[in-house]
Every structure is written in structure tokens, then in C-alpha cells.
Image 1 (cartoon, rainbow, N blue to C red):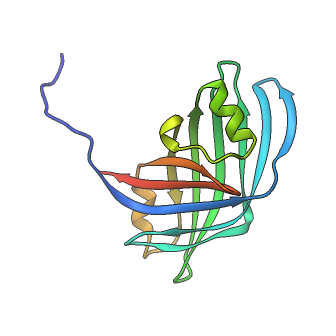
Image 2 (cartoon, rainbow, N blue to C red):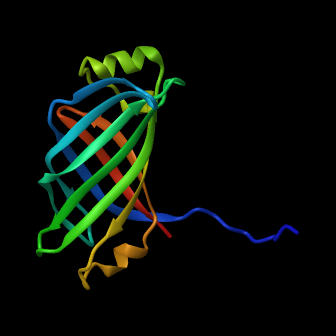
Length: 158
């Protein structure tokens, strides 16, 4: 039986995330695809309800280039809020683009985000009572490659 319920996807901004990364470590062809590791070297997040820095000691993106041309992300990082809370942020995501755009990105060229698809699904974990609400949030990140890293607009799905 199908329910006739009117539903729509609603969201509100959670924060803008700017991630800085070290030069990637290329592992080469692995069983899942071409694997690179991007160690997080820092960054910031800024939003109305939380803001702070990305811990430069804890974080990496285990990126895999799949046979179908898509890139899959597996990211973990520690967010340090300006008021002292620690928030573990994990996300997976997909980046896809034409071969020409992938080559431009690989060369470090600035490419307009409208020319490729970069979406993530972040989740959060914290013991902070102030930010405990994050433990129950589903979010979506819209991303763009930036010089030395990546930027995301992260939205809480309501």
C-alpha cells in the first residue's frame, strides 16, 4: 500500500566548511580502484550554530577512483568548536565529471563547481551537551575543489 503523504525535502544551512589537505599519497591501483589518501592539514567551519577549526592532526580522505569514472570519498575528521567542544565528522560522497574536467582538476586548475558533481552525506558524533543535537542530524554537503583543498556548504536536512 502506498501512502499519499505530501513530503518535500527541506533543509537549513549548518555551516561552510573549508578543508586544507596535504599533497596526496597515491597508492595506485587497488582492488576497489585507484586509491589516494588525502591527509587533512586543517581548515575552518563557520555557521550560525557552530564554528571552529578542523584539527590538523586527525583527518583523512581515503579517495578511490572507480572503474566507472566516479570518485568515492571516505572521510573522517575532528572538528574543534571555538568554545572547546570536540565533534567527530564522518562522511562519504561522490564526485563525478567528464574526463576533461577530471584532468583539469588533477592539474590543480580552478574549475567552476557547476562543471562537476560533488556531494557528501556528513554525520556527527560528540559527547558535548551543547552540541548533542548534532548526534541526530542528517546532513548533505555540496562541494567544490579549492586551491589546497575543498569547500562544502553543509545543510541540515529537516
